[in-house]
Image 1 (tube, rainbow, N blue to C red):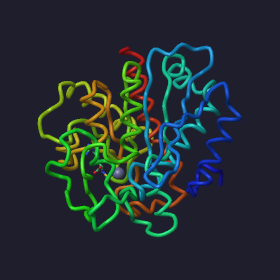
Image 2 (tube, rainbow, N blue to C red):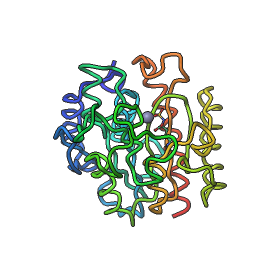
Image 3 (cartoon, protein in one colour):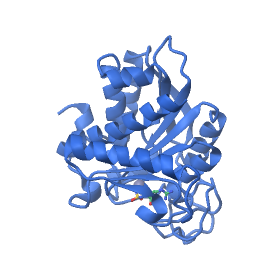
Image 4 (cartoon, protein in one colour):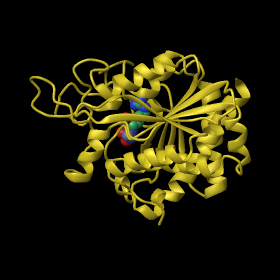
Length: 305
Ligand code: 0X9
Ligand code: ZN
């Protein structure tokens, strides 16, 4: 089995990043955007074909939640696929002729490492805030979008602890700062999670419909249809609040309210058989489906911008 069909310790993911960047300087650039609460580096890989002047960018983050291992596996698979097939996959060539990608393979680096060494089902990061009895903030409740309303918890011991204030977590702050800095060019935001097989879009912090509801709905349905036809698998779709649950402080809603219209959360395989413990033999299928969705979103952005 190749690197991409396995789960890896963080150290291996870091060496993979330097290696793939070193071997593909015409495509990849490694950018340090900050560090975690335990001082691990947060690296983004910028995917951009040399000589092309892109009209726009798409941001993809993986590993917001520590135990969702298929997510970092997808970001790695996507970059591996891109360097291998950017000339042979005609859709990808068309996309990379117009767009560049910023890919953050592991956002919650401390939590990910913790799931490898200590507690496989850990979700949050590993920050310790003064006066708190428990460690960890849910990074997908810490963004400044309806922060800590219904669907999040102010209890530091809860799985959905929102943190002491919006962007209190260095991981969230680093991502939000980078996206704010590049918000003129970033037209798409895609956050990769698991599990439940869904294409979600804003809003999740309120039940009101987003201004672009119709367009996002059509796009999400298109992805879901393509996965059904192409891979005989079922993906739900719709605004987060209606489709899974009300949940404030999420990155997709925050990006959308910042002005990034094409903002999505993808929940990858499976639908509960293995849950977070998706076996390595299913990584490839999960990534192919997710790639199809990313491709459909990216082609739509190419068409519209
Ligand atoms: O609850 C979440 O953060 C996500 N589901 S997960 O099982 N991976 O934890 C869904 C996020 C949907 N978007 C927002 N809540 N903003
Ligand atoms: Zn998640």
